[in-house]
Length: 374
Image 1: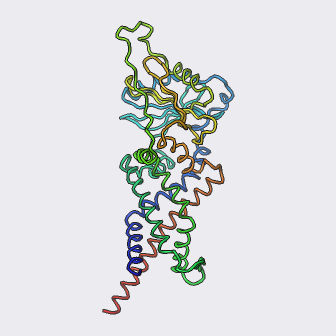
Image 2 (image 1 turned 45 degrees about the vertical axis):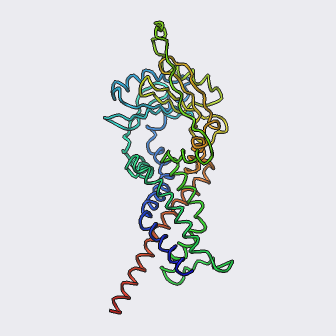
Image 3 (image 1 turned 180 degrees about the horizontal axis):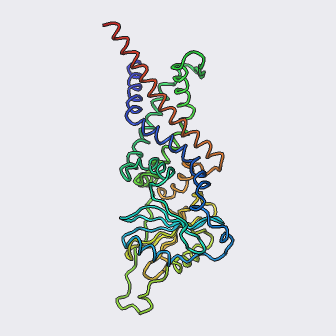
């Protein structure tokens, strides 16, 4: 029994010391993000709010001229995506990924005039978000975060096994009046047990969104078949002159809205070329994702609607994103859950830091004891 407990202890320490720093970073940056994002909106209204003179205007700016100007500035290889205003007074966003620049251009939603722009890693909040979501390593960072989530599950399991009392109810006390090491040990042990499942929800949902192959795993476990983007149909070899003229972006947005009349359009994703279907995202009533993942797919050559996909009709792996995202950010439960989520992130960081400190102090004590005996 003692040897088995020693094995669990070694596993717990090995996972904590090898990958714990990533969990500490993810927990603390996530907690700070929840508070920093609304502060960033307050500090930079020129990015996030339309000017007061146009907030009440009913006419929205045409997207086609904005798109044409963006293609002239950033080149034909740029990936462009509009984020449409979701509330009165919100600005219109154009997210750009090009060889020359990556970031967001903030526009007046009525006049289409630029209000400002910010690079992908410009500003404290943007840097913090990239650090939290990719470790500043792009796709490699997302994969690392996903595997770290698995390590946390093993950390939680081994920690509970080490804590599990021989006799119930066991000792649930936290002694704070003896010394710092005893207090931190009790806080680390009880914090891990009491908050472990909440932390697991944050870690697993974050990893799920960061690394999309996990969706394929969920589909395999649930027996669900992935719902893919529709392919473009073959056009007539002798199209008419009218058919040769592609529809405007605004006309396609209007077609998408007609195809999903009960939804609110959130993102217009510009196809990289005319060989790919164009996706316009919607949020329909009852959808938990704040921006929605319901979609209307269109043919960019003709403007024809190719598919209408509501979030609950998607495969399990894709539909789970609609719940995982607001659960991870706390938006699913409003301000109360956001506060709980931020506190849980702080607890995760505190567990990691206290664990490393306890290991270091015990290591110093053992080294000192061996020195005295030699």
